[in-house]
Length: 283
Image (cartoon, rainbow, N blue to C red; front, side, top):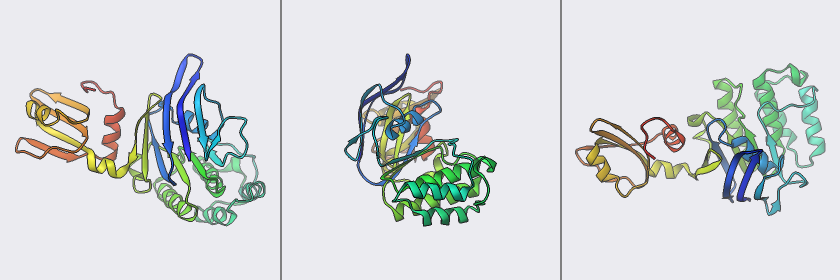
């Protein structure tokens, strides 16, 4: 459904996306992870057709995506999105009037769940409530592709839990491709099906969470034993202190011996090893 071929995006002399080739075919909730400045927002804006790429092509549902494309079946909400300063109820009504597939009942149900005051004007809402209104409008659009850029900004812990529930309910009601960019890694793990990690404009990882559970491990012990055990494995990071070492792998783990400790990596630790650049780490 979404296909990127050799996509590069430059701003002047700065290359933000670097020769990205990526194919996403199945409906699902995808998580886009990356450090600040990794290229997450640029990637989402490019898929949405908000900007043209410098090189390469992007297609959604077989249609080329550019700033000139019409009816791309992509709905995108960036962080700090702005709307007309109208009452929330009227914003939802306008959105439904310009889109015949708009799910007004879902939007209204979510507005009541999050206790949004329909009479209050958009600019009078808190940051969290502004973000929630934008997200509800985006999800209710029923486009084939939904892109949410940092949608939990300004949310407290309870709102974030409610948001993930809303995301799941929306997908179950209208299965499609939903890509969520976020920094809060562990919280969204129960909601998503696939993970995309971007680092310095390049895709470092694209697979299911199950693959991380099966292949992401930390192996610790004497340096010589750790090196021998991981000799033919894919090592994504390594720490050494004196004669001790810890290797982080994405591979089938070796058999545990008396001198080795093998533990699965959390999603957050896996992300850190994939994109972290701390001193002493061997790549």
